Length: 238
Image 1 (cartoon, rainbow, N blue to C red):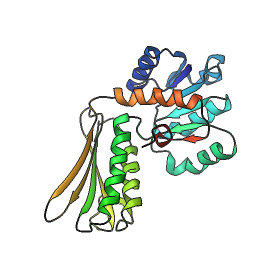
Image 2 (cartoon, rainbow, N blue to C red):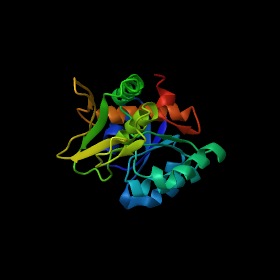
Image 3 (tube, helix red, strand yellow):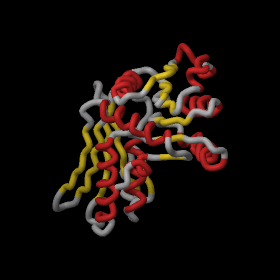
Image 4 (cartoon, rainbow, N blue to C red):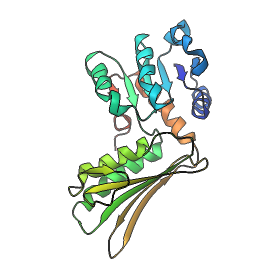
């Protein structure tokens, strides 16, 4: 498979190595200083572009890739609120393809399935209050993390006593989501169910970005053969 990379930071470099190890060809690498390469024949030859950039750049990158007939896999977060409707329309009505995930880790996909199941159980036990905390490296610009938002939305969908999620709240009708930024932490997500009697905690603690990078390449392999707006739940049937 021919892959283009959009964004060539630590994640982009790790994706490049894993893709090559899996027998794929990197035909184009686009970063801040060579945006003109979106118009190159090398980029247009890609089956899929894998995009990991900043929230303010992601949507524009999708448009540039789509204009060249290239499908996109993206792990960029922070753009959904402003451009979500446009992306959904492009994928459902205009024939574009985006595989988007807030987190490509296989472990996080499993953790997410456990989160949904636990929330369904806890809906029956109002004595437990639930809150979430996410920790990431100091370079992460958006908060809470896209993964935390996804997990929070899954909880709210399954627990009737929570209206929505919010940061910095003491109101029990909201799921409180806290964020911490320190060091070079790849990502820790913790969900706590606390009662007067006991505390139930589930945590996903990433050791490195390798799991995210492998998941992104697996998503690209899946995206090559599928179309529309795709997610982790399409690729992993938990």
